[in-house]
Length: 80
Image (cartoon, rainbow, N blue to C red; front, side, top):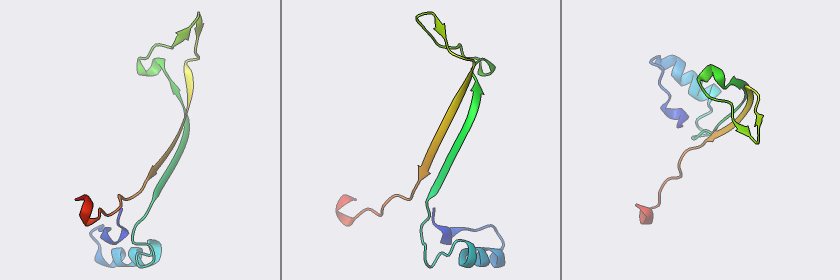
């Protein structure tokens, strides 16, 4: 994401956000990190509970997720 490209439709608010919140002069690109932990009921989503050798998993499954989004590097003239 390019913070300098942020546009909410309010020029004054956008200028303040770029200068104070995003600090676009010091940080022209940003990185997004997200982490989540939650339980999911398999049967609530129409999924059968997996089984192996007669043992059936619990209906509630703990899900942990870590996601990172970063800008693509600028391609060099030789890679275009």
